[in-house]
Image 1 (cartoon, rainbow, N blue to C red):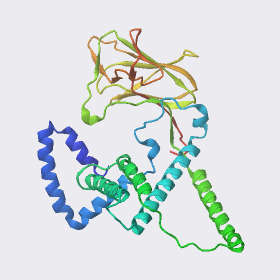
Image 2 (cartoon, one colour):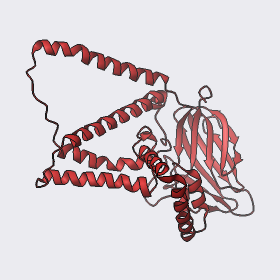
Image 3 (cartoon, rainbow, N blue to C red):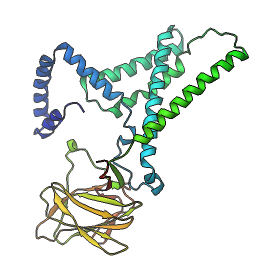
Image 4 (cartoon, helix red, strand yellow):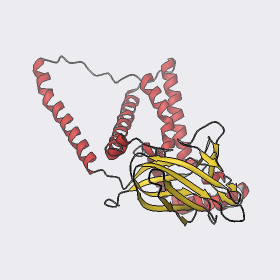
Length: 335
């Protein structure tokens, strides 16, 4: 998240021993280069990444396998609403817990205070581990949420001196409350209005092992045909399916309503198609028409269905297997 070159270098090294030796040298060199001020700045940057919740709907989610039409019609509104709501909720939670901690007078003979101390040490220790020693991604920071909820319950609310509130005072408060509510709604509306998406995921199956696990491709023998159906609830204009770099395959997409067929173009480890595709049912067809086996990225599990329709290999269904594909709507006006 903060140095892609480190990740790329480590992944390309031969084995764990080589990575350990390289990392040991780099850690010493990095600390000497950064100096205490630079190191503190790096740790603060990693902490900021850990506590950033603005992209919550994208964590472990490369796009819904087939989002309904009503959602895609108003996707910009829904995504902005989720983004703002989660950020505001997180700020309120952090502020409330911090306020209670500042006002807390601990008595460790009480069970609640012992529980609160355990939650504090757990949350701070977890953050320190990721900030100082481990990688930082925003979704990892959400692991402290249970500890924050425990603190919210275990710590007493600040004691505020009660004052007698008259009817006149209540009436004076209403304009302020109304102003705050109106201002919040106005700001919210401005954010929603200005938010637009450059791409919309219409349908996808992107579940696969991460690069560092070195997942093995599937061998496709000569004369083999793979097919998988995909339904689009909304139009798309970009389609890609992941194969393997340097694999010689024939990849086509067929509209099952009109019968029209498009040939995909190879690009690195993908085959792509840039073509307006109306909503409807489509069939992905991959063929090994050569004389030698070819490699393809095919994801298969023991008990989990990855996509609405399974892959068929030479007309034999594999219900827990799927291609890795992506249908998108690219908004050229915003991109």
